[in-house]
Length: 151
Image (spheres, rainbow, N blue to C red):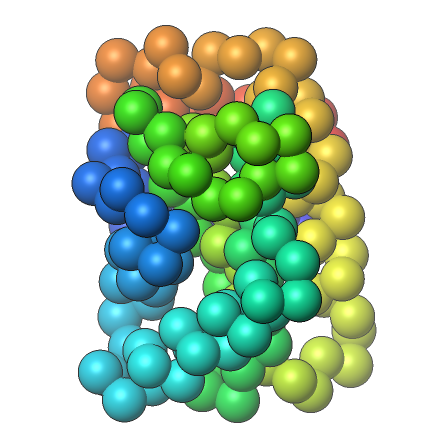
């Protein structure tokens, strides 16, 4: 399921964000939403982060939320070479982001299944650690696709 959500136009190879909020704003951009819809998703993500950071440690964060502005599950992957202070559980900077946004009505529970797949994918990427060494966007995308195929 995650393989079909991985799209090249939803990959940010060199994130510029320096803060948690900037990272969330940057991750939303590839969804190509209107300014109004972007604000709705951003507010939902902020509320989710207020409950507890989605920075799971080992340089990975999986910000996620549900929002009425989308009609299908969407995934954006971002890489920050410098890392972002995302209040991760281990206190370390986050280098790899998986933004997952889904509509509230999800009869096939695609959102929860995808969230689980993203977590497994993140674990494999941590083990390989190759995502930080990718020289360009194509290589980064190839690494993501390979790992997604193993999940």
